[in-house]
Each structure stands twice: as C-alpha cells, then as structure tokens.
Image (cartoon, rainbow over all chains, first blue to last red; front, side, top):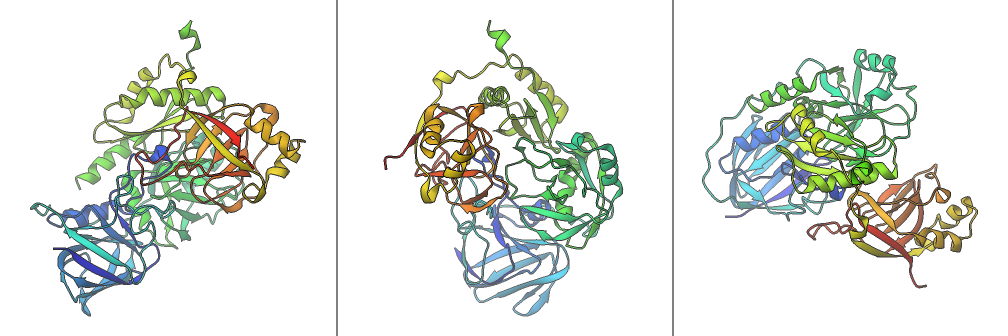
Amino acid sequence: MSALIRITRAGPMATIQDSGRFGALHHGISASGPMDRGAFERAGAAIANPGPEGIEFTRAGLAFTVAEGHFRARGEGGAFSLSVNGSPRDWPADLGLGAGDTIDITPGPAGNYGYLRFDHTIDVPIVIGSRATNLVAGLGGLDGRALKRGDSIVLTPVAGRGEVSVVPPAHRLVEDGPIRFVWGLHADLFAPPVRQAFLDANFVVSTRLDRMGVRLDDPSGVFAGAPILSLVSDAIVPGDMQILGDGTPIVLMRDHQPTGGYPRIATVITADLDRFAQMRPGTALAFAPVTLHKARTLYLASLRA
Amino acid sequence: MAEAEAFPPPLILPLGDRSLLVRFGTTLSDEANRAAIAFGRRLGNRLPDGVSEIDPNLVSVLLKYDPERTDFDRLAGEVRLLAGALQPVDEALAATHRISVRFGGEGGPDLEAAAAALRMTPEAFIATHNALPLRVLTIGFAPGFAYCGFHPDVFRLPRRTEVRPPVPPGSVLFAAGQTAITSTSIPTGWHVIGRTDFRNFDPASDPPTTLREGDTVIFEAAEP
C-alpha cells in the first residue's frame, strides 16, 4: 500500500537522494548522492526491504505529517533531536509511522546531514538512471530542487521480503584527528613551503558550505599568496581541495562540477569524507597525508566496520 | 608508418583513492585532445576489471574504479598497456552535426566586442568562425556543455575579465580558440556570441546528450 507524507518544514537543501547517478560524467553530470554516505547506508541496513532512496536533511532538520498509509523509517546521521506526535524519541531512530503521525526533526548537538530511509520507494521519476537530486544541474529528486514546506511525497512499497542487516556502529561524531588526504592532481604546482604550511596549519569550516563544496577559512593564510595559475580544465572527484584565485580553499563535495580549472592540492580520502561533511561551520581541522595504499586500506576497513 | 604516428605515452596519475587519470598533456593542445578522444574510444569497448565509469576530458581520460575490485597500481599497469601505440581516431568517420546559430543581437551580446578585439567586422567574424569544421573536444563542466575546437591561432581571444550572470541554454560561447554550446543556464566568462535552438542535453532521452567527443560540428549562420 502506498503512503503519502507532507513536508511541513524543511531546512535549506533538504533533498531526495539515492546512492548516486553514476555513469553520467561524460554527459557533464556528477553523481550527487548522500553527503554522508555511511549514514545513508546504515539507515538502509537497519530496514527490512529498504527503498533505494532516502531524504537527506540539513542542520535545521525536517518536519512532516503522514497523510496516508503506514511504513517503517530509520533515521541516521548527525545528532538530531526527534519527536513523534510531540513525544521525544532517540536518534538514530526506528520508527513505525501511520496516517496522522507528525514527525519533527530539530537541530541537535552535532552534524550537518541526517537521513530518513523507508521500507518504501520514494516515488519520483528516475532521471538518467537515478532519483538522486543534483541541485546544481536541477535534476532528479522532486523536480530537481530542494524540498520545501507543502511538498507531498508518495512512498510505494518495495517488493520482496528482506532481512534487517546488522547495523554497523555509528561513527563517533566528534572523531579526533586530522582529515586525511592523498596529494592532489596539482600538488606539485604548490611550492614546498606552501605544501609544508598546508600540513602545519589549522583550517576552519566556514559558513559557506553546500552540496557542491565546503569553503574553509585559512586563518594563517597558507594560500594567501598562492599564484593564480591558468590550468586546463580537468576531471574533479568528490574530496578534491581546490584553491580559488583569492586563496580560498574549497573541498568539492557530491554535487561538484564534473571538471574544473583551479589548482587542486589534495583529495580527501573516501574513508574521511563523511566525517568531513558532518563538520559544522566553526570546526577547526587539520589535514594529514596518507599513501594511496593506506587510503584504500582505510576505505575497505570502513566497509567492514 | 602508422606506428610512427602514435601518440606519446600519457602520464597515469591517481585522482583521489578511487579514480585514475590518464593525462596526455598539461596544456590544451590539439594532439593531447585527440589522444584523449582516441584513448576514450579504445577503452569504451573494454573497460579494465574494476572500472565502473570512464570520462574523456579535454586532455585526459578519467577512470573511476572500485577499490574492492582493483587498486591503483594494478590498474595503472593495465592502462599503460592499453595506452600503447595509440592511434588517432579516423576523423573521416566522425558523425557530423550542422548547428545553426543566430549570431549577435540579444542572444549574442559580445559579438561586436569580440569582432572588434580581433579587428574584424561582425560579418567577417561570423564568416571566419563558420569557415572550418570544428571537433567536439569534450562534453563536460555542466550537463551537455560542449567544447568545440580549434580555431586558427589568428582567431583567438582570451576569456572576458568578468563573469556574466547565467546565460540561457543554447548560448554559443567563444574563447581560447574554442566555441562552446551551453545546454543549461550557467554563468560564463566566455564571450557570448550567439544563440542556437540546438540543445545538447535532454534528461528524458537515452543517451541524454547528442554530441560526442570526436564528432564534427559545422556552425552556420541562421537565416535572418
């Protein structure tokens, strides 16, 4: 049986996501997908017969009412506050919801992104192989845009009977240690003293962050005098840290442009990208290089965590 | 002999921990672009184990791989062998697209300035622009965004110093020896010289883009 929910409050940039729109780079479209991939997958693993999509919401949270039907949902990611019909509930959350229920997710102590997955499919069109919203290209999800108050979302049942996976433990939200990277495509174009200063410095997550990229404040001015280079546009991957012409470092995220011409000093490793995405504005961080081998080992370990 | 014409071997670089970049140059040259197109075509029919997606760019080809199925060293070894004795794609066999453009006017606000910068009349600019067929260098940057090149050296301008607010889909852009066609609304620092009804992106079509790197594009002035 289908279900219907109505969004009564949506923070900025709440979107419908699936694992991503892979295979479309050669059409000029990056993959999108969840900013905290691990949290998105944990939410799915906690549900029997999860639909492949979920709702990604941002710090301000999300509120909705169930207009029709019933379904199960799992909330994961960040540390949000949750109430159902006015009663506080734990987060992460397992929810059995039915018509008339009101769900209110409000800001909690940590994290930028939270997820709701369902034992239903989110009934929006598949666009180029995916239902993921790409806000930059205006594709997928609900009309290629962020969710807003008044939106109705139809959930349709997922066929088959599934088992609930063992839910891997949540990442510690305040994990110590630098964000690890492999040296970037243009690292050799940065002078050795700049590369060393990059390793020694602390950066701060700025307020300018979205699904496309996270700008960092650079209080010690590591990149203040970096030369403006004219580079041929080349492929970008999530985690690439590019240095804009004015010296601003920006880590490119899931809705990145497929190609870019700013110099890139580093690429955040896959195993640390979720943790980075959840860092709120004002968070201080440092970066540390690892080998490709180490990056791969950490990634494979994260899959088995 | 054919082997003597083969492209020089590329640089094989990691890009993050799940992509490999096969780079044929660090500047945008005709040879590097033709090599990237040729390598993309060669890979297109037989992706190495563990590779999920390839993306030919202006002077490189990106290979995305699954670290559970392969690793950089192994893939780099396979790619090195695959990139050997790489021959140009036969351009005589390329698909040809005729694209009609309304130059100047509301849709091409920079035509006159671009022509003046080249010490040409707008009419001479249009004639020179359309005189030779161009190659689709790559599709990228934005959905369906098509880079076409190359114009002769005497017909080159750098980008504008200021970025224009978003221009509509179908805008025809000119800079750095290239002509580009937008398919979505995007800001641009290129000279906006005209507008076409051609759209290189339709999310409802399969495939969603019409032009492919290596295709031939002939620009024509729309009948007034």
